[in-house]
Length: 255
Image (cartoon, rainbow, N blue to C red; front, side, top):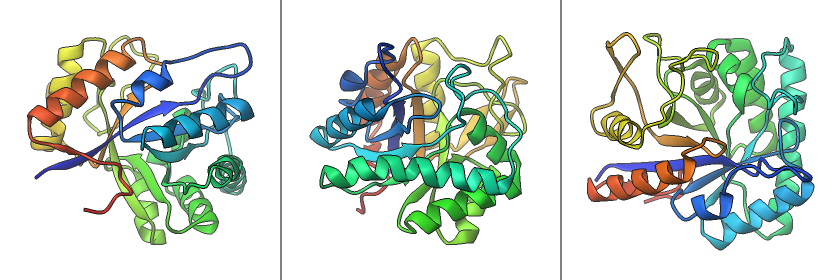
């Protein structure tokens, strides 16, 4: 039987600002990437999201990003590998505290936004992130873009990795995600998102914006919690994959 993890970025509210519908989405996903207070989130939101995930049996991961609330962590920032290491260790540690205080164990780490996309292309940045994860806890799973440098760096470091694909984003022929600056970067249609996910899992192929098929490995599928159709996508992808005979299981659970 095919098996896949279904993850969602969440815990991205802070202060008086509310984003996403985390409680409802947690009914349909198997892993939660929780913002650690830099690109979004705050201590109270982190604690609340950790507890919600535990209540619903969803694997918990840290979602560290650039210190850029205004840009939601999606603006490229020139950063050295040493700075990236410190940034990631700091944010994993922040969420780790809440997870431990709740009597649970953290499952994975998935960098956010621009940090994630830059690492997918930059071996040195990826090596720094992988070392940060390893040094905090070598049992953590490192999520990275399928075919990207972060997965390679994690494997080289000795970490368990998960190649990630996206339900709500389009792809370039290089295997990279289409930049959000482009008009065709986001998938807004439920049926298109579902079809893309099913094909990536069952055929290990995705159609790039050029129309060419490219190979892809889908260990975990991302739904962006801040997306306008996040809840609908999560529900329909979950329902369709189960109907297709695909087992949905968080990445840290052994068969």
